[in-house]
Image 1 (cartoon, rainbow, N blue to C red):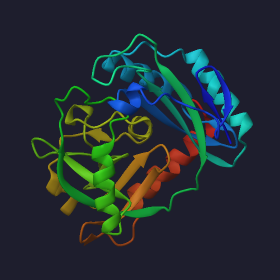
Image 2: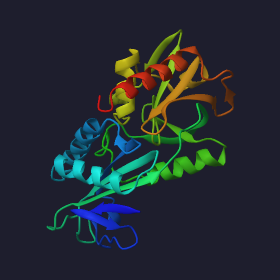
Image 3: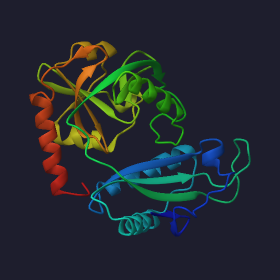
Length: 273
């Protein structure tokens, strides 16, 4: 396995990042996960644009898109696989042990891991913790993921693959690594970005391609929605067959199945929409 680290390909067994890297010591970093099929990344331009938005939100220098593209191409060529999780990580670089940044400049890492297609339907749980829709990191895809680690462990304890959060005012927000859509009276709805959710790439495409409405939704919508599905880079569109103790028999339902079909067709026709 070979990865890209600060300007060149390296063997994963010998690649080294400083123990003083700000991404390690204080979580001062951002990342993107890109789906790669047979060495071809999907929606890379959108991911790079979001990487830049996240960098600016943290006050990091803009990442060099040409360099990141070269790094992605090199890593994909060096590690052929049918379906991969391409991970771009960009941190504050070598710094002091406190929150102040150093002067060494950012660290760029691009790595690839093999993955498999997710099942068409899955189970989710709700968790008692909230997303802060007014926080300094709201809407940024940062490496500060410990909150998600805790929530996802809760989901796994209950036989689920995702945990759903409300925001601080009790509205449905997002999952640990996914956006959520619900079907009400045959219409598709998803929480707006203002709810505090991440502006997911797959979410945006699903909204564009299906005409889903961005709607403030109370958490109890999960108890009455006709259908529910998740979107994310590696899930694409994935139906939900259970929320907590509520079963949704027949998932994926007709609206979800149509959304899955549309996404498969549109994403297959254009690798960089």
